[in-house]
Length: 411
View 1: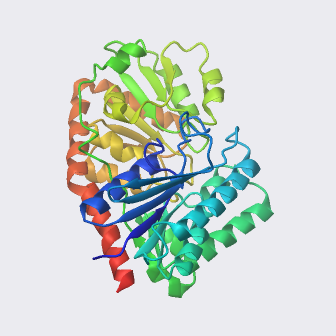
View 2 (view 1 turned 45 degrees about the horizontal axis):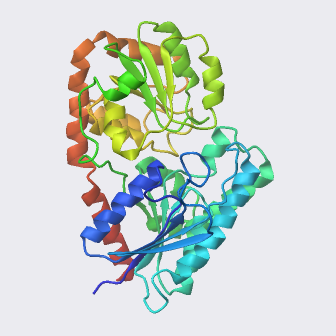
View 3 (view 1 turned 90 degrees about the horizontal axis):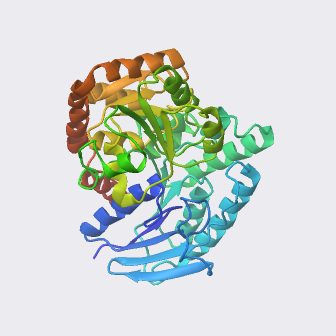
């Protein structure tokens, strides 16, 4: 019988974070492969940046499952997403509490095949490594976004001492881990450049995936459109975190120039209030919050064209997982992102959209205008994206890549 796997992650179902949805489906595939899994994660909190109703009152909650167990611990969320010191302290407190639970997850009598931890937060790298050493196991560190690079590029962190400490923590986490998993060749190049040569072999590329069984193409005339007061007009949609890493001011400017098109910004985040102020007086812009997981297909179908804007410098350190979901919903994409990075390669390979340079409003608006002018012919681009997803990024293939890596470490 194979040894269990311990998964240490910041989000897990029913939490709604994109990374939580990714790891939840990977765990489902692990279970389908006959593995015992013990998950250590946070109490659900992503949607409102506060612990959700029904989950409050306890620092730690444990539950047995048919395939193992789930331990949920307090994430110590702050009220403000922009208070980086408060968020850092929360991450540290969560990491310590989660680390203690990881040491005991599944019982000390069973030695895990591996402890898989996820970043962000970066603190989980050493947490997973220490727990792995205490349990005589292997440490696999999964990198969803390279930190602190993204925070530095966006100006979220400017203190040189904090940046230096974060870079030290990042490098040590990579060196200590038995394997580091990144989502693209861009991220691999980024990580390899930061580690000693002897550690470069530890870095493996396993892309994220999309659940093409859950996210399926549906009619554009959805109930969600009706809820937003939208009829048959063309809709350009941004769906995801409304933060400062995304160049969403370009979406507002595009709405000013393309007044005959309706724009929807679907999501929540630190930049939303500022964006709503910028959009004041624009009758063709709608804002809406996160929707339940079961409505993802409907929400994505409501947009005729989707946008994936990412600020300059971030394309090589982040692969927006929303791209896969949009393609699964058979909708075309306009991506404003660094050239030669993963999203641009996906769109070129699939033929499902247009890439333009980041932070270039004129190019962004021109690309949107081109797709809008095509009318229903853009549906062909969307269908090509769906076909690419079905053949390239299935959950089963991705999960089995992780299992092969974990088993090779044991060997």
